Image (cartoon, rainbow, N blue to C red; front, side, top):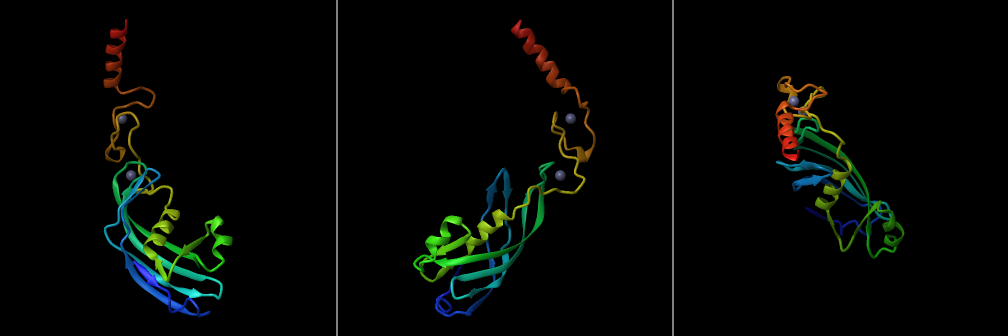
Length: 174
Ligand SMILES: [Zn+2]
Ligand SMILES: [Zn+2]
């Protein structure tokens, strides 16, 4: 999704309202997988402050990801704000601000909202999404989902099946 800002490029105080739905593609990021089955709603505006364009918007939707403890697939709400400086590449301001990376440089008169939204989403990912606050997670030894009940592993012993295997391997070595 792109927004044509030609109407406000030269008009200080000019403003374009945004109320749209943007489909984000599935994303793998730092070990997590994020799947969007419906578009994210973006609501806000782009305004010209005389120096650059300012994009302020609220994005809301939902996505499917995995519980950080038990890896179960969960649907979680997505909600984040975008507050971004948009600077035209030939405006003379671009060289000053670009190295900091805190501005979006654009050419022509079209702003690619999908890119901005996808980047903002990554910056707003929470470290851990959980299926529930008290998720017990998986047994580190046998991998059983401990939310469904205790397993037979004792905390300081390895799985008996593994120890049997280790016995066989030790015999082979001797
Ligand atoms: Zn869980
Ligand atoms: Zn276990």
